[in-house]
Length: 196
Image (cartoon, rainbow, N blue to C red; front, side, top):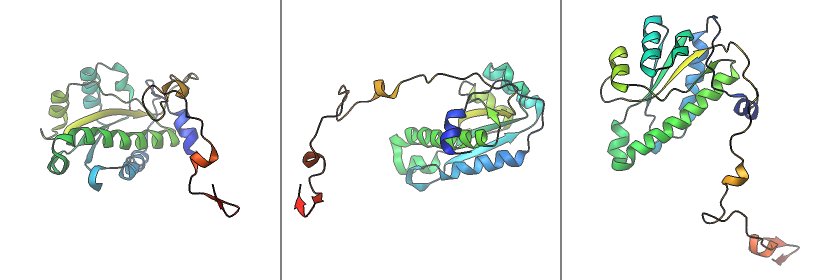
């Protein structure tokens, strides 16, 4: 599947088939996170994968998302903040969340490419989640992903926001690019031996 197709096809899946998922496919998708941009080139993410039904059920309760119980696997993304905090001090938390988001997008698109479905869960009781999985206190839980094969094809969706209405040029509030001549746009370009 081409990247553009994966981007447009990706959906939040909340109904899963009762079909076994090959955990190696999930590993392949997690591996794509290594190619996301990371502050200072330091990879701060860690992952937890579980197929234990009792734990998946507990997560469904603490996230208040019952559909999670249908998932065959659950992946938890965590950030280990130590090195990033040492390097970037007050900016570290922002960088950790930004790079986690970039890595998560790689993961989501890879799942889509493999025909797997998930839903990005960001609402949870972090302390309870850490207790269930014995996650050390210093780790930051970024998100939870129930994974399975989608039960039904999602409906075609309309794009939520038109890019044109969100664009600003040169300063906030400018909705159009300034009209320029070729000379203004490309002042150093040589054309037929003449400096434009």
